[in-house]
Image (tube, rainbow, N blue to C red; front, side):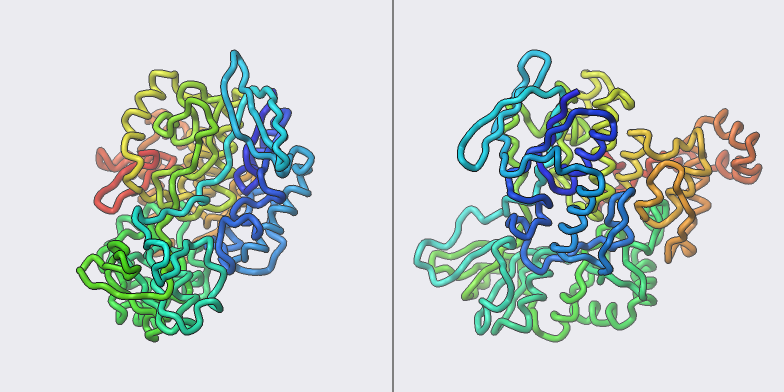
Length: 518
């Protein structure tokens, strides 16, 4: 089988790695001169100074430990890591750099993929499958109405921010309460004359280290679900035990969301301290630019700035080169429902994702390659169409995506993780441990307790998962001494509706529980 991969960032590289390992003939097209995607410093996809939010414990691929010493790597360190991954597994021979795919169309039984080099030459090749991994963080959102030419304000987006030096002595507004907005506002705080930070709604920000531990080491996969049963104020009390000074500062700023969502955490080490110290000033939500270049806020007030940095997220990826594709026709957000030999290995476009690191892309690519090679199957065309009808009609409504839990779900779908109905002990070892990628490889799981799991009812989660298995499966697990009589009895006593599917459904919206894939 001939497979074309589009993009040589983390997602594209693991697609190449897994397709080659499956015996496929692979060609990868990367329009830039180097690999890395947004982690390529020369690519323009991220602002200088950006650091990975996932720790060195959780960010790498399952079969390639990091070579860097940093707890949370920089853009350059991530790119060097990706280079070492590509070199170790011989991926670069399959990559054509400076080659942009401009058209993909189905012709008969094959895909016709047309690519263009920097000098304008075009080449068309046939492929049996196409894996699109071109990333989604490339086109920043902008307000519809920008200041007119000649207005005395400089407006730029997050990828155009090159550091604080250019803003010395200036009044700056940073718009956006997400990670990029917090990063840039905190970076500017000590350098600019004044930094205002426009926040529409309060988010839960935590530093990378919590009580001496990586904040992504606080809960296991199962613990990430179990913590949803903990009242949010209790959860905040736990954080206050781990981070007493930080949480005291946080409360004093008035930015701490008192009613919140345990899983949806933004990672930033400096913004709370900057606001507490008066280096950054929270202001109302941005409304619009006035004709004179000043900014109007949602409360009706108006202020004048020398510069405005827009951190409003990103537009949906441009899939215009994929002839006939509508985003609404992506089954499970990844497979073109009309022909699943075309798949998109990007983060779903309707999400605010947490934990989007190498293991997540590895899991998506693993499922896509398993389907391409016949090792995994999808529902029939009618079922795929029904799923898209039910789930892809409101892509503008953002939902929370826990990429760590998605890694479990996708691993079960592709068959790369132990099936709990066949090997429950190995499955439970994986999901009750920290989010360590090395545990995701076949037969390699080692128990790694998470920092706060001992405060959670993990036994209850275990029994809820057992309750979701057929009774005859539970009886077999008992006969094989994988579970004990007390487990069998506890699983049978789980109330109807409290069963927990092995792929660990989690809440995806703040106003109520929804399963992954919802």
